[in-house]
Length: 273
Image (cartoon, rainbow, N blue to C red; front, top):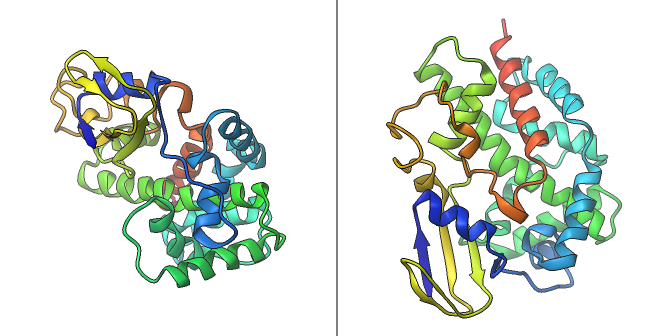
C-alpha cells in the first residue's frame, strides 16, 4: 500500500515521527546493490547514525568547498551543473575524474526505473576503483556524496541560474538559492515506510509496511505556510520552513556543504567575463 502526502504539516509530522523510516536496502556483494546497501541514506537506526557520521567526516569545511566551486565555475568552459561533483571528487581524494560514472549511477541509486543494470554495476565498480579499490563503508560514503551532489546540488545550481535569468533583481544569491529550494526543488519527493500499525488523525489506520510518499514539492507550496506559493519570491520571511533538506531526525547532515557548493558555483558563473 502507498500513501501520498502533500500538505506541509503532514509531511513535517511524518519526518519527525520515529514510527516511520526510510526504505532500507539490504547488504549486497557488489555493484549498485552493494552501494545502496552500504550508505547511510538507505540504512536505519545505529547503522544509519554511524554511516552518516562517516560521510560527514569526509567533507571539508563549507568555506573550502565554496571557494573551490567559485574558482572552477568562473571558467566559461565549465558546465555549472558539473561543478559540485568535480569539486567533491578532488576534495574526497578520488584518483581520477568520475563524472560520467556518477551520472550513470544516479538514477538507480535513488530507486528510479533503471535499464542496463550491468552497465550501472560496472560504473559503481569504476567508482570504487577510483578511490582505494575496496568496497568499504568509507568508499560507499564518498560515492554517495558524489551521487547526491550530482542529483541535488547540481540540480539546485541549474535551477537557481534559471531563476536568476527569469527573475533578475537585487536579491542576494543565498536568498535565490533558498527560494529555489522551495519553488523548484531538485529532489521533489521522499519516501518513508511505516514500521508499526497505528491511527493518524485525518489519515485513518496506517499499517506496517505502508510506503508513504512525501511530496516535498507540493508541501513547499502549501498556501497555509507560504503566501502566494506559486510566485517566486526570494524575499520570503519564512524560507527556513522549506522541506527540501528534510527535517526531524533524518534532516540532511550535509546541508551547509551543499549550499556552499551551490553558492560558490552560482557566484563563479555570475563573475564570468
